[in-house]
Amino acid sequence: MAQTVLVCDDAMFMRTMIADILRQAGFEVVGEAETGDQAVSKYRGLRVHVVRLDPGRLHV
Image (cartoon, rainbow, N blue to C red; front, side, top):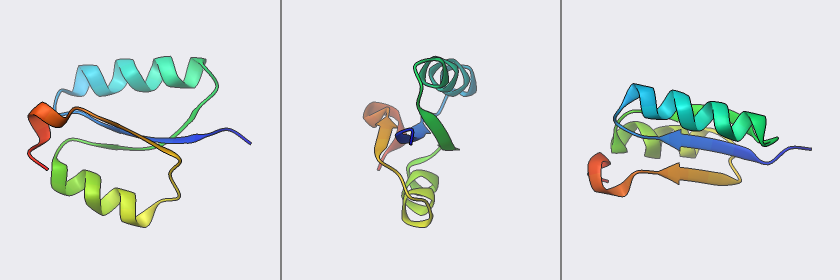
């Protein structure tokens, strides 16, 4: 079973690039978030092993 990941970044191109890299590495990207609030909400609703977070931009 692949490790599940939530990708959080305010820049869509970065979320997409990071998600693609993680998928190629064998991770299952189960969600993406643009804001800190979205990240917290999605984290609570998903079974996530790893959260990739851009802490300087999301204002969590």
